[in-house]
Image (cartoon, rainbow, N blue to C red; front, side):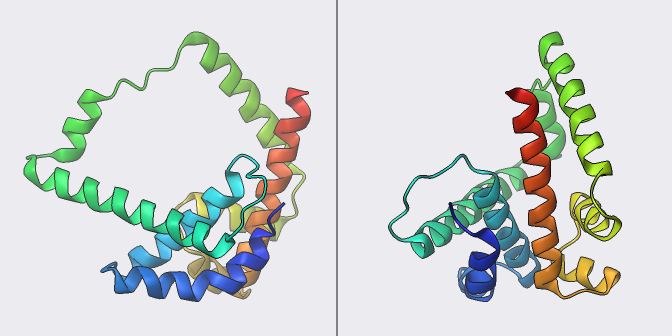
Amino acid sequence: MLDVQQLFRRYNSDLKRYLRRRGASAETAADLTQETFLRLLTASPLGHVDNVQAYIFRTANNLSIDLARRQRLLPFLDDGEEVLDKFMDETPSPERVVVSRQELAILQTALNQVPQTPRNVFLARLDGRTFEEIGRAVGIPTQTAFSQMVRVMMHLRAALDRARE
């Protein structure tokens, strides 16, 4: 299994630099970097990856391409977000609603077990704050904020896995 925290420490700066060279703003590069590692963390078990660095950079590149495509499409529409909302029917089925409510209750119980600081990091990230912003607000290094986020997500994933068994 990949140690996402170690990979984040090793490739975080290089990945942001790579994305900046591809034209992303500093903020967008930071967001794409975080999204890359969150995808890595939440992905199904990968098995053996021969070149982890290439995998990480390919994931970031794909995310930047997806973002560029969305940004190219939306300016041609008067209100692109509104048009996209009309095309997508995201109404879940009744079965999905029941399962989602059960999963939410499991996640809430598991989150209540997490100590206050990691919980605050997790909730701040859900609010869209970067790890750098969270670290400053909570008074911890950026790497620690990321590590705490990873631990909380692993705890929540384990709770869901246990419930599904």
